[in-house]
Length: 505
Ligand SMILES: NC(=O)C1=CN([C@@H]2O[C@H](COP(=O)(O)OP(=O)(O)OC[C@H]3O[C@@H](n4cnc5c(N)ncnc54)[C@H](O)[C@@H]3O)[C@@H](O)[C@H]2O)[C@H](O)CC1
Ligand SMILES: [K+]
Image (cartoon, rainbow, N blue to C red; front, side):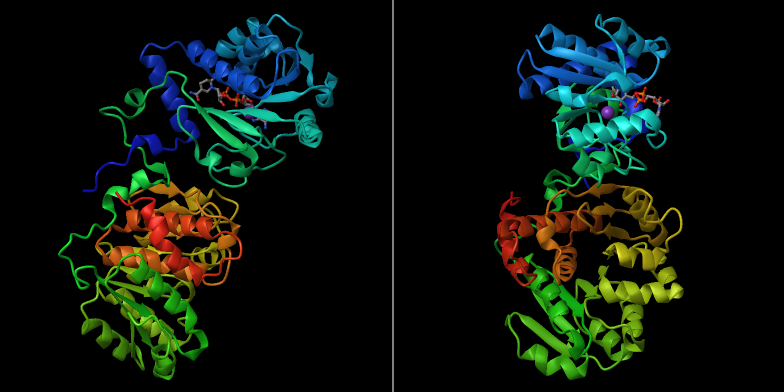
């Protein structure tokens, strides 16, 4: 059993965050005390950006997000800022902690239609947070557009108004913030686009809720994480001094013919660079000479003329993991290779063409579900995901990437890496992680082939599938960051030793 992931990386859904609130209150902290601390954290963020005397516009909504705003307004006025407070809603409707916070505000409460954002230096967005339950409309939507058009610095409370805390998605207008102050733990919406971009810098404030209260004995373990080294570093392969190449695992990469020689080699090189002891390309006979003529010398190649020969090649080699997909082809031979790959009891990564082949043959998808006991990782990008799972709920591209990846992982009994600028890694057991490393520089031909090779290389060294996929995505991103724009996929394997040094214990 792998050691439990650190709760410091936990991401909490809106509902889980409400549970954290309740746990804190059950432990004896008054709900209003939480709001006071939340409002203070917001006031501190404004104080870091502005100077007393400056005009601050505080936009409050009808619920507790607005309550945080009322507290922040009161504290900022006491610090010498000139506060304009506007309420989207009726003051008489404010109840509970928000009503108490509003009662603490002695200044005027304007209507949304009365204010001019442009007359201020800083704007606090305390309109909607965890309670957003429909697209912003009417006067509030118009206000959001005016705030965004003002180009003034905006500090959002909890999440930018209009952004879903669970998915990061926006169904209508949404505030574009320079900074978002949130509480206790991040939400998925802080790391999933467009929410991640709309948040600006996310500041995590301690409002008195402790890990003990939320993750302590008897509480369910966290299942959603920010993809950071602490999540998998302990499972990275370690090689003692006396090791040898066979101990470091042997990778095979199923390749196609002459049409795509480069892609499988990128995967194989990445597997070697991440630490696999051996890598062999199994290609079609017409491509053998081409593969043989290319470096690195550590890379071997053999030919397989059909599915049976491929299966025999797998059976006669002491392999530890297999990558199938990069430039595999989409013809009958490719389908035979994917079938053989699924039937071999080898840790397996399916990428690119193998996913397209899988999508075209539903019987193979059933084979996948039968591989419960063998580590299997699928690494689709958006298009491959939709081809595999269809564009219907809950897989549809309009749904939360977290939900989509999780559902796919359960359906295929495989780890699913839904690639993108906010790659989500989901395991069949319900765990999921959202990645934040990398940059647009990685959107280049062959980048995915390298990622597939890194995952395969880590599986070959015995790393569990979910942790191997999380580590691979993180390292791939870091390699891309180190190289920056101008990188081509060929550079990525060579940048892996540097990325590994960031996490080498
Ligand atoms: N531990 C914590 O996380 C703390 C969180 N706090 C703050 O509480 C809010 C959540 O407050 P809640 O009252 O549940 O919801 P909101 O204030 O976000 O929304 C208010 C209300 O608005 C209605 N509504 C929803 N969507 C729309 C819409 N599109 N148009 C109009 N009206 C809408 C709906 O009825 C909502 O109930 C959280 O974000 C934190 O900021 C605590 O203050 C501190 C501890
Ligand atoms: K907000």
